[in-house]
Image (cartoon, rainbow, N blue to C red; front, side, top):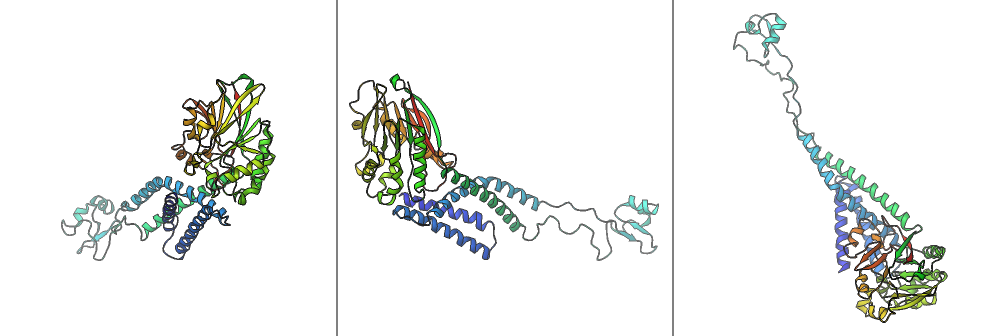
Length: 447
């Protein structure tokens, strides 16, 4: 169903772009045919990219396909926004073209009395009197020549039809509007995507967050979690992406490292080498991982990654919890599987992860999706750390994410439980982040 909806949306988007960027900017001819073929080629590259990703194939066209997807997205958004001013400008131009033009005053025309040869100005007796010194009416017998009449074959100035648009006026207006709109949309879309790529492929920002937990043992004050999610190791990231994240986390000198899902987009066979730098993660009480929905996209499921991460020194919390002892006090750190595992019988089990805890002890839960906080609230969790949303990744997509998740990014309280949602350190699909820079969070607990 997702594939059908996506394919239908992509086809409609490309048809809209053809109407606005090709048909609206060119006349019939070779240029229109060439631009049409170029748009069809971009559509084929995009579809090939998605088919390859669904089959687990690393394709050389992935970069081109994903970058075009981002450009296409912003072209459609910007062109849609420009529809209203485009319509207004078009209406103004049509009105001006169809309005009657001012008619010039007729040139004075002199008529001669047939018998006497006296010239008088017909049509304006006062003017005739000024020229001849006598009444024009007296020079020409009344009724001998109708006022304003001309010699046979003469045409008064300004008598030609006025106000008619020049031939081809409609085509000129259409091309002007089409090309101006296309230029604005093209420059804006390419500029936005270029900025978004520099953000997505650069260093994540460090987001310091202080969370106050009313039940927290004061001895746990200052306990710090380095929280990272949605690293999305894949064919577009490279090993440098992992190395950069590990280097930045180690620089925080955190007590606990929490990787809250969507670490990879592929199998261990494909991406195992990209995960190897995780072996160098440093923290006082260890690094922990919970599954995200993307771990379940692999045909092998998340089990092979759980085993691989164990060998790299990262412990997976599979519907279980551990005790973090700090300065003579204890904190429960729990983790639940992602809801994406429900279909395969590997979904979250809150009762197993959170049941039987010591009374009065604070609990921090690692859960990939913010929507899991509703169930966490029923089990008395103090704080949930999540990811999944990417903060929207590409604005204004954050508005859509907010329809499905209670929290898009940052700290909020849902059903009495504080939940912090990190924007993630990687990207999915296009290597572009607009309005939601990649992030590694440093969460400090305070009583």
